[in-house]
Image (cartoon, rainbow, N blue to C red; front, side, top):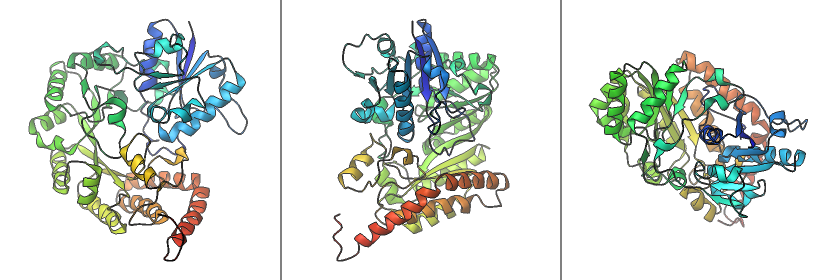
Length: 450
């Protein structure tokens, strides 16, 4: 049997850094491998650094492993590659496995830092990969799990450091998404077909987590209420079994259309819903393919407020239909509604998305530094607003919404903004110089190629 260590690399900046919610991928894979007798641990850099690039120090757990696995999102890919290369240099015989969304769509790049790459869902192939039963191919195609009830519960005990810092325990009840938003890679990663765990299977995990002492849960589905009738059944059973916990989830605006569902959410202690409103610009919503309008957004916020359910709204700024006025109007809209908290993100062309293909073909992406693809950096040339201006307007949007009137969040937001500005001082300096050059090249008479 092998000693397997999974690493969750850190992003350069994490806007969610104050909320400790572990990513589930490694814990699902770890549960599968542990069931077969392998020794497994998970290291998350959200809690403790595993590699110091300045000193070259590598966490001893990595050096004592037979297999080291990485799950890469785009904003963590660069860090994952550096850790993988350092471990391989120190221990040439260790096997490096890389998977996750970024590696799935950037195969040739990721293979430069791995012995084996897994595309897509890995639970059904991870045993063969660890046991070297995959033949000679360095690329292993994952197999979608059709019956999610067959998966073991994610084993959170595998996390070596930080379990005591969890604020919410994630529970995944579905995979896939029938929607196809232009900036999202979920459909290409998990497919358009929704796959659901049974209510009994979810309830069993809830009861197990409650027995462990946890009382706050985050249903980490991309759209928790995709099947409203299914969620009604789940919540009704929670009430019948008198399960006491608080929960949050990500949903779409259409959740507000079902009064019965909202009542059940209120009775089961749903205290916050996170919703991808994305934009108040009708043209941008069409470009994003959100299948919703401004009145749907207003109605949703109002209905949830009536049920005492707080709303965290996501807005993605910088589409080809957005200009400076769009950003200003978005802030005013948020201030004038009963939104409790918001997150203003910069449109980011993630590999695997239609947006990435569009902007790449148009030559508008000006950096492939993946660490900047975190929703807080401009990495492409917008159409109706300068790149540097978009960067600054979004930062100011945060400051304007989280003003001193929102006393608690004022200080938290200022801390996050100062942390971002401190970490990106050099980026802003170089970015300002670069975008000035681009702007000059675009002036009439210049030789800049569109």
